Length: 298
Image 1 (cartoon, rainbow, N blue to C red):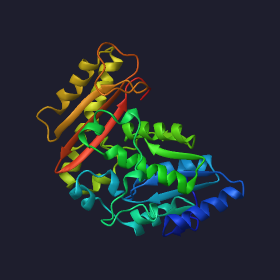
Image 2: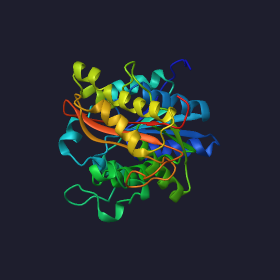
Image 3: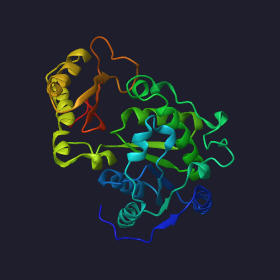
Image 4: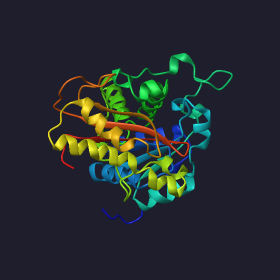
């Protein structure tokens, strides 16, 4: 949907955002929320457009959350450009943008070293086990902790997340169920022309590596082809992905199948009725993830 640019309210800290959101809700207006770490792209903007379609306003947070990084170098390299993000959001018709610091989100809850006190952490639910949870220890604990605080600041009616981070969407749904709010809306993965899933980390890839990274989506589509041909055994479906990825440019971390409605640490054994294919790999020093629901129409 094309929208005429509107003035964007840009707020510097969570306290100001909390006041703005409380005033908005007090007027009986609904609020859609898109939490981000910035370096925005068309995938993020599609979430904003969906939020605007379904609510009276769309609010976006931009905060590179140190709690969810288990590699300091990864945190330091993560792309940041708040000015460019604000321009994109204004063009998309976003209502309010806010940012902040760890101390701003957790006032009085940091120790003398600037680290979060134990009582402030939020433990993730059962969907944090396996795959990303195993490869990135503490990652989902950091996600659950900041998302809980973001929800407390905004108190949205609906919050919007991309399907690309599939396991994260399950963790967020676990959190929302425990809190009793908000409604979680998971939107389709936005892809580049090559099939590569749009991600802020793509900006860290060299042009040649960005082209080669499309092998991840080709592997997922191979699993879908096998599913459409009647294959229901997870081991055979994941083997179809690994065949595409074998001897390729990416260093594979996993290529596995899960039942998307019954998450398990390990790949299911025996035929399944529902399936999501998930892949993670490193290419040119950049870690990329992607996934594809196999039992739904393309």
